[in-house]
Amino acid sequence: MKPNSKLLALLAFIILLAGACSHKAQTEGEESYGVSDNDSLSILSNTEEIMESFQEERFDEALSKLYVFDSSDTTVSPIPDEIAAQLRNRSRIFPVKDFKVKEAVFKEPLYNVIVYDVIFGEPSPDNCEVPTTKMAFNVININGNFYVTIMDQPTLK
Image 1 (tube, one colour):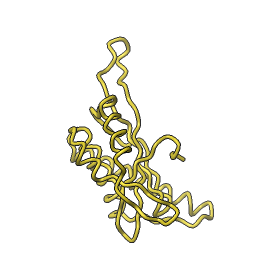
Image 2 (cartoon, one colour; image 1 turned 180 degrees about the vertical axis):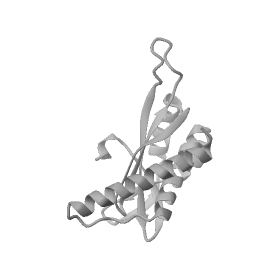
Image 3 (cartoon, helix red, strand yellow; image 1 turned 30 degrees about the vertical axis):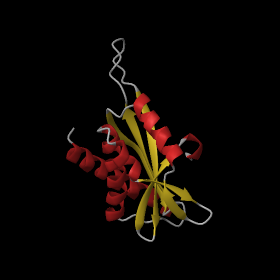
Image 4 (spheres, helix red, strand yellow; image 1 turned 90 degrees about the horizontal axis):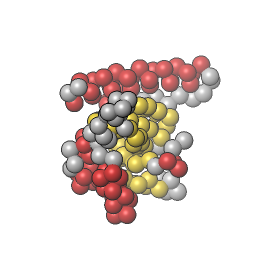
């Protein structure tokens, strides 16, 4: 699948999911968080660019687009060197051969999660199963600016 067709397929998925989520929230009497089509595109394209950079082994480029969110004062800052080193090591062990959106959840400006299934190896000769892992991002919206933060297992809700 070409990158443009991937993006279009993912966009359609996100828009359908966002519509279903907002309908569910409204039927349950909850206040819904509206994500515009443009915001959905921005959230998806930000994470898609990072995944493509990892796939093409442009690690500095990918890491330069990642941030850490401080919930105590709602600020973001570039990821520290320690996290960058961990992500580089992860990319060596689990290289991104291919990826696709597994899940997208838009709850509020500080919680917009995109989870990717990441193929990191060749299919097994025994059963043709492809080795996969997951990579998750939370895209923070502060004053209309989107910041992509990496999510690790303890932070996944």
